[in-house]
Image (cartoon, rainbow over all chains, first blue to last red; front, side, top):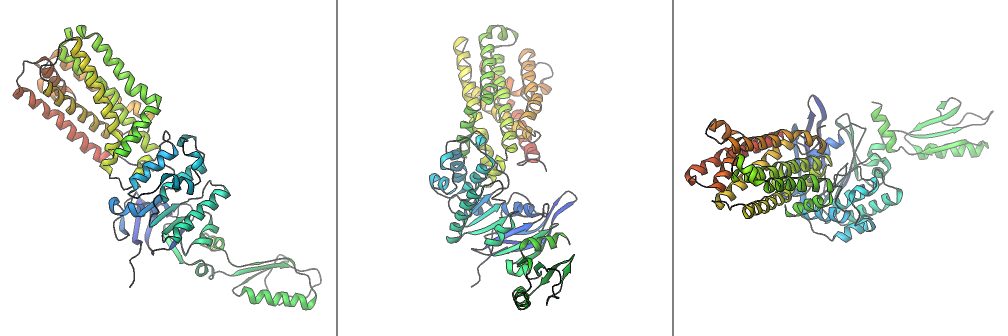
Length: 292
Length: 239
């Protein structure tokens, strides 16, 4: 029996005065899924998330979280943790007080010390928010989002400003949430984070959801690249694609073409210089999207 | 709601600026009026001194601090954070203004008890209680409306001045000149009817039937301010 989606957005439009930030956007996030919403600056990601979070009203379209309106906080919030893009904590409260307050209001139950530990903030428990660094504030934000292990966690640029150790521990905590069945919705500018973790990715550009799918589905529409140079006097290689004296070959059949090239080099005794080959990355899809 | 109120109370006592401007200065001003009550009662009556104490605390303590608090919480995105929880909008607002309201109530009651001890006790204590509660409701409602026009805590220093000065001026006008002339105008102005009600409760000599209708303008100000707040109040900074 099919289950209803955790997040269900249907023909969403968001406007600010005359400016249309989100145009006719539809997406679904299924239970237990890790969905990454990516896009260029001003693509409409945050506007979309704000409607999903219930912080902003749509000009038109419908949004349902667990089948409920996002503005119905009493029904939705106990099942949903939100990591906002900007911190939003009172500077005069301590870390422990902030987590305790927001946790108590979330409608979920948890142990504040456990959450501080998960977020790497135990040693800062008694520090006032005003004295935290930017990265520590992000971790505090994360702590309130994961308090009580919500069924849905929305992470808006979660690793911005975090050092590598903090990022690793944050993703480890997210992995544990996923193991417990939580659904994750992520926006980030670090594409490799989405590429490594997301089950599906939605690519937004200028307010619309241009493409959506798994990493493999998104990258297979663009060719992989093999590049190399040849010494003077070398014979013509079996694949074509010269570019300013070097070879830059685009291929949809990376393994076979690379095998053919290496076999040719071996057979002819030619040394391939500056050889590089790799699959299409999400960055390439992104650049292609931005280039129109 | 009580979790938010508790956190607000912690913040009030940790923020020296709020503590001094919102809590200590109104008490100091009120203390001056109580200390000089004979001079001020000669201008109007003891009821006038009680009214001016009430408005000093509620205007410079309750009203100004509430507006500043709401603007600061919005600027810090704390309001947005609170709305990311299961707390409803009314419970968030109530939690934010509850501590400063309770503190102001305690201040008013304490100062008026001192006034009663050093002079004469109020004639109609229940009516005085009603007048105090109605005035505080009006000032909280005006704070919610004013917060909608206030972009930052610094901006609150400007936006709170008109109402603060107006209620003190109206209280003095009504207290010193009475309501024999321009009665309707004086009673319709913010704080006018409340001042008269406090004076009637403290000085006595006016029947309950004549005093109770004075609640209507104050309640009307509450309704008007809440309606304005509903239109003006913003939870986030403008984009």
